[in-house]
Length: 225
Image (cartoon, rainbow, N blue to C red):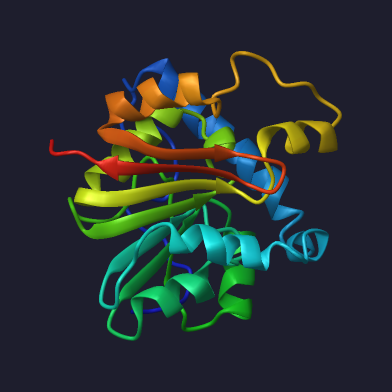
């Protein structure tokens, strides 16, 4: 597996045809805004959160990975989760990291070269076969998705039945809102009453939910299609 960032069929670009619906154009525009936001921050991103590593490792343990498994870090950013994912699946396992921002993938490759195959890809359009993965780890991803339902369906497509999904953040919703000077609202996508039906519709079953000051972790299982 090549660890270098590479373009792929999942790379975000213009809508596929001139007749693509307007929401596809809006999706592409939102991805462009995401790339712009994270691209300028990639080099200094890890320095902002230097103490999060142990929380990532603990959350990855919840996936129940075994040696030889295949796992995707969806929205991998600078690749902070890649070393513990590699440790969990061993030398014979497969680790992929997908991100929409080239600068983030450059940082991931620089910091963790050889740890994973890196994909420049939209998580709603992944260059992976059906049921290719045993698990998906997604740190801080869901709130940055232009179309969360579409992305969760795509993550389900590439995960085998019985495979696991971990939606993670190293601090909980209330602590994160306070960090940004905001208040929690009832329509927060990551709240359990909102997340559960979204996951169900996408082919997942919510299997565990924790939202504390120290972490946010929603664990789901891929159900039979």
